[in-house]
Length: 283
Ligand code: PMP
Image 1 (cartoon, helix red, strand yellow):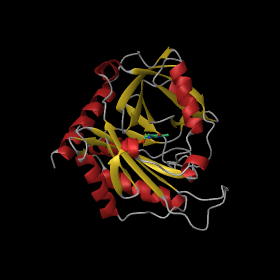
Image 2 (image 1 turned 180 degrees about the vertical axis):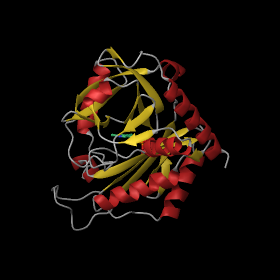
Image 3 (image 1 turned 90 degrees about the vertical axis):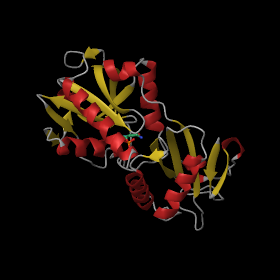
Image 4 (image 1 turned 30 degrees about the vertical axis):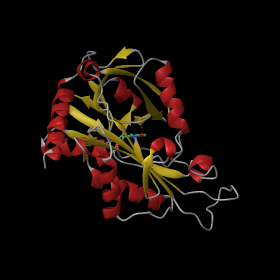
């Protein structure tokens, strides 16, 4: 499988980085996951804009211009044997010696990209929904940065896996923020609610698409604080991410969400999302 490291394309298994890389030692870097449908990267400009913003947030110089990123990603996509892909892209602050917390005086960012086959969620999950648990949000205060230091997310996701469910929904002081690796929407009385972007959640590219689709199709939408109580009393709960697209959560902490079935607004939004994907692919 052909991957990309610091400007070179080579088989993934042959790529090597320094053990002094600050991504490895300190989790000092940012990343993106970009879905690719039929060799067309979905919302590429939005992903590259978020990456640029995240790099600026952590004072890592953006290693490439926008056209250069596009070209490298295009080459990576063409080098794969499969057409639906999930591109993982990571920029760390790079190798530096000695190990220290503060930024090194000189460092060249390490840029890694590889592609995996994009597996859509199973039909069963789309048709019947998935289960989730809630857990305490133990992360820091800058969750809007898509940082590679993901230990709190890893532990939350493992809690979900141990409980036999698909996602962990994170609550901070009685407020619902997002999933361990997704954004969360709820529906109550045909109104869609989701938290407004803040430093306490990642603004998902999929989240933005859902907001656009809701507005375009005049579905009632409120960006406001969603309390744990609103979550528990919701008619529908959805999770969204680049890899999961949009899935209904029909069981939360062992209790049915609404009537325990995939809801009508979910079905509408799922359809709109699939149509939107098609228009992008055929442009
Ligand atoms: N929040 C978190 C914490 C995530 O890890 C992700 C997915 N990586 C998302 C939200 C969804 O973001 P996106 O729609 O860009 O995949």
